[in-house]
Length: 342
View 1: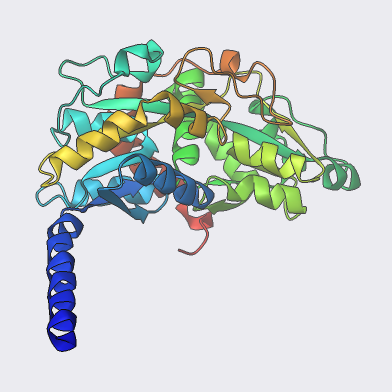
View 2: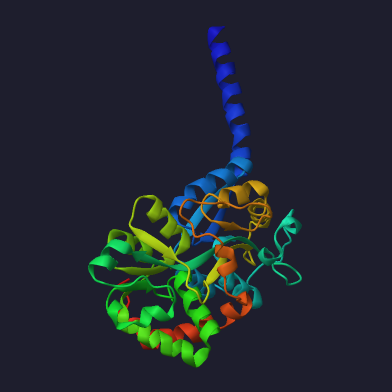
């Protein structure tokens, strides 16, 4: 009798286990391409998966330039399901090439107009904006009698010889937005002439938008042209740096979300696109960025330059994306010799 009971219990347990298998199998794994900072990946994944436990994010993370090149290389055989956290200029380029799946996320109408694609049908949405700033090490600058720069033009002063570091625009979104903005602010001819002079003072072009401000913070270089929030973070940690918005204007781009055309996980991808424009998502973005796309949210990180949004130069994100290949080819021909090894 006891044997029968044991067998019956075991059978019931086995059947229960089998019944749970389909539910487990229904969990969808999304391949998500991103250029988010590494410290953002865990919180973003955790927040989304808590809201949608039936979907799992598998990050593919690299710098903006590398992810952009990867999407373009895979255009005939896409491997990504979603882009979550890549420069809008790159995403706008993908849109013009037909690489995105049109989708209007639930709740998108609540966003600031600049953070919504103006194309119909809509294919991408904005998350947050980041700026290129100058991080100036006041201690090292004082030791070397180097004045605090206030403009991009100041950086061509021979006193900064080998004291400047900036990102390679082919690898870094921060680097490309700076180069593009200089060409817009100064004009094509004057812009390249400015970069010729700047190149004389650049010690190295990094492959990360965060690295220049980190190097300036450590005193390895006097001036780092880099990512605004990284500069604020380093200053808050005690680094002797000033974060400078150049008087000509601050180059910028915004991070964007989009569904990749051809995804086999469309329903799950749409859940991520919806989540990306939700109020909780923007509250999360605001922990890492000072300028976000949700109205009424004004994150104020410690040591972030005041009125930074008013310093943003006028930029056509679509044009910024479409001219990318031409500008990067010219930049590489002129300056790549000082790029850090990959």
